[in-house]
Length: 283
Image (cartoon, rainbow, N blue to C red; front, side):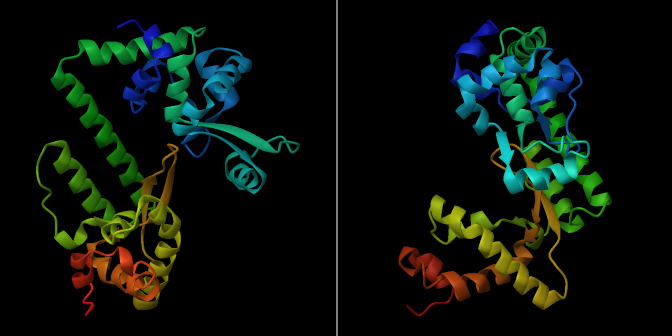
């Protein structure tokens, strides 16, 4: 397949959106201290083009790039980000343009005047089309193991909950090899959005409620255990990574209590008979 096809087809580009490993294989990629984002000058240096070439790609394809982790921070969001990641920032700056790895790859799929971008596109297509299935599978497994290693390093620094990480690792490895994870069912990770969906909430309702649901669950956990819940690493829709609370199935009673106290009455009409019976309702 001609590498220029990627520059013309959004649907084709979407098929390769997760192959961010290609970036470092073509050329060393520099990121900001958060190890998640690059700013516009860094992306321009990576692709060895002027900044206005990147700006032109952004103007023509902003929506697609935003779906892959492109964002412009302003105001308080900019100040908070700059205080941690931009120690030498221009004091007159009021905003910053950020690209997550997926957005950086996305730029390379569309940038026509860069030899580096051309190598990125060629590498993407060559690996997918030339490599036999077992090689592609090995590459996916290596990427998964690398992710696990990164999480393990964060756990060693006390940034992540070790129990959650151990369970998450077992699940990831088992799925990688098509097996069932051999872990205590109570150690299986539990996620607020999944719980809310199981209670019958629609997508927009989940997005609206999940933040406060998590805060209320954390408050109950701290009241019961005398300490805050552990942390886990979570990928966000825009491609960045942040730490959130590390719940497991052991915490399901807390979730159910939060639901009963703050949400059951509000969403009673949406609950199925099975959900109603699980919560012990007499209705």
